[in-house]
Length: 382
Image (tube, rainbow, N blue to C red; front, top):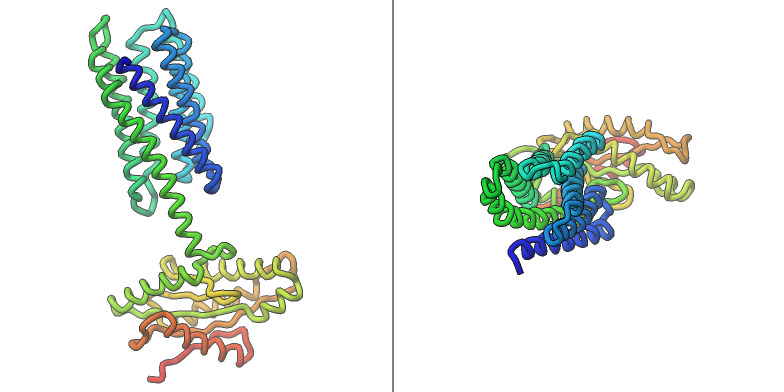
């Protein structure tokens, strides 16, 4: 078996495995749009490499043209998928118009009136540009690369360099053999490894996203989208340790909706769910980025406010208390919500979150006892 046959078989097999892996990920793990786009990209790559093999062994210009069209389409979809995953805008015509123009130019270059240099330059140059755009689109905003993202970024950049090197070496082809040695060396030695590596990195990115999604589901409440009790406990351990290390205050607020059981009983759980979501959103918007909001169970929420003592936390919760009265429930527009709040702060003897929760719960009980719809502070006995 020739070297070309081995390489084409490897690339075809890689595309099959990638298309299957992406399809399974899309079907069973959230049906994310970018994963479907990557599935289509590798699905078209299967046809592309099959056409490429047919063109090579049958000496068919038509199959080579189809292979070129497939390569352009597959690369375009890969770039679109990267932008979709990064949450960046995707304007289809900005991708479609250049792709169609390159397909037409590729068909002309492969036709009898074209030439090898033109054929070797057009598609690699375009694919190289797409891979460079993909690498730049992958760059995260406001955070660091994850390990799979970094590997994908490096391989996309290497893919871009390899394709541009192919285009540059094709420009040297002036005669039957001039420039062909370099072009073939890059195509056979460099590009297969990069193509396989890029595919593997893409799968790792999808797997990493899935792992992150599962971690989020384990630590977040699906109804309100704030931390659940497990997530709150883990975040509290870090917050307490940080407060002690830097000798900074840390406030805890425990709060709930007054009369929530009656709301559920009288108007149903849908109305109750609306109230919980609205209240959680109020709490999240009221605190600073980096502060912690969690649902402790039922209608009870816990908040940890960094660099805040009880008086600062009470002021923030007083604003939340007032805003709670303006929350509107579509199913029960005449209902006025209200909430009570218990506030405490980290004390020297506190070992864990439960020590603070006990005081905040007592302060919340006092707020309920004194008439509800109020903020109560647990003062230190000292």
